[in-house]
Image (cartoon, rainbow, N blue to C red; front, side):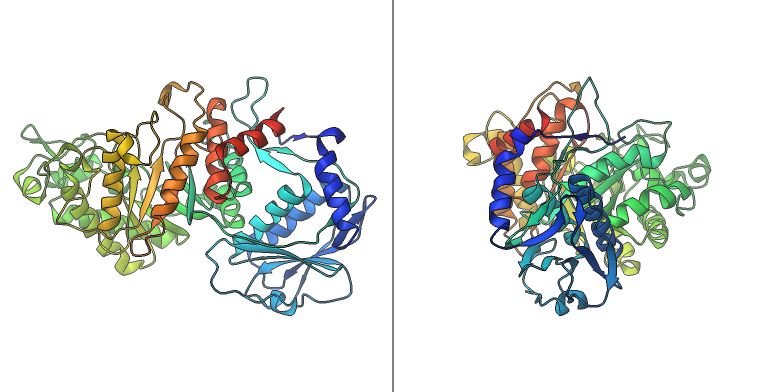
Length: 525
C-alpha cells in the first residue's frame, strides 16, 4: 500500500513562502482553505494518458489541499471559470486556449504556463508529455516527490511519496518549457518476477516499477519474461492488469531479453522433425544448447524466427522494440556453413562472431519489417559480438543495444584516454554509431558489486556517463537514442539511489549527482 511521508512545516517553509509571495502578485488559485477554486479541463477526444494526467492532478491536489477539483471534458479551453487546461500542443483544446504548437520541440517536451489569473496551461508534444507536465508541476512547484525510500528493512514497495499539506494552492506566474536530455529513457522490469516475486498478480508484481518510472519521466519499459503463449496470442492477465497501466502512462514498450529460445520455441517435436535447425556441438545436433545455439546459417531458422515474431506483433501492435537477443553465454553452432557465415571469424574476441549474429538479425529484421515497418529489431552488442564487424552494417530498423558491462568504474568515461579499458569499450560503441545504427546503452547501475548486491552508489559515474552519452546523441545520422538501466528505478534497497539518480539525470541535463543525492536524502530523512 502506498504511504506518504508528510513533511513538517519547518522543511516546507522556504518553498511554501516563495510560492505564496509569487502568487500574491499573480498566478492561478486552485484551492482556497481546502475548497476547490478551479476545474481541470481535458479535450473531448483526449487520449488515455491525457485523461490519466487529469486524474493524477486531481488526486494529488486533493492530497495536498483537501480540495477535489472537478475534471471536465470540453472542446474549448476558454471560459470564465478558473481552470487547469491539459492537452497536447496540437489539440483543439490548446488552440482555443491560445497555445501555438512550436513544431520544433523534441518528443516528450512540455510547457507550463499561467495566463492571467484564470488559466494554468499544461501542454505536451505528445500525450505522455502531458503527464510529465503534471508530475513536474506537482514536484517543482508544490513540493511532491517520488523515490524508493527503503525503511524497516523493506526492499520493495509501491512508489513512496512525499506530499506536503497546504489548504491554499496558488500557482505562478509561470512560463517555462522543459525538454528531455535523452530521447530513450528506459528501465527493465521482470514481468514474471516483478518487484514482489512470484505468487501475486501481475499488477502487484509490476505496478511499483511502472509508477515510479512514469513519475520520474522514464518513457520506455522493457519487459523481460514477457508472456508468450505457444500461439503468441495475448495473455489475459496482461490484457486485464498490465497493459492498461502501461497505456495510461504512454510508455513505449520493449519486449524481450535473452529470448532466442522463447521466440523459436525449440520443442522436442521441432527437433525431431528438423534437427538441422539446431546447433552442431561436438559433431552432434543438440536441442538444449544455449547462446546463439541454433544453426543461424540455415535460412529456415531466420524464417521461423521472423514468422513467430510477426505473429507475436500481429497480436501486440503496441510493441515498439522487439529484442532479438541470444541466451546469456557464448555457445554457437559449429557447422561449416555457420563458420563461413562469420562465426568465430572476427579478428578479436569481442568481434569474433559479430558478423555471424548481425547477418542473422538483419535477415529476420528484413522479414519482420515487411509486415511491421515501424518496429525496431534490437541487436545485443555483448560478449563475443560486442564490436561491430568492419564490413557489415545493420539493416534499417535494427537498433544496437550496447552493453557497458565491462566498463571501468574507477575512471570516468571521458576523456577515454585516461583508461584503456573504457577507451576500448566506448570506442566500440562509437564504431556502432559510425556503422549507421541507432544505439541504446544498456547500463549496469547496480554498481561494481554486481549480483552480490552490496551498497555501491555511483552517482558521479552516472552523471559522467550521461554527459558523455548526451554528446554522442547529437549525431543525427546515427543517434545514440538513450540509456536503459538494468539496476532498476525500484529494486534491492542498496541500489534504489542509483536507479533514482539515473532516471532524474536522464531527463534533466542540468542535474548533478550531488544535487540528486541532496534531494533524495532530504525526502528520505
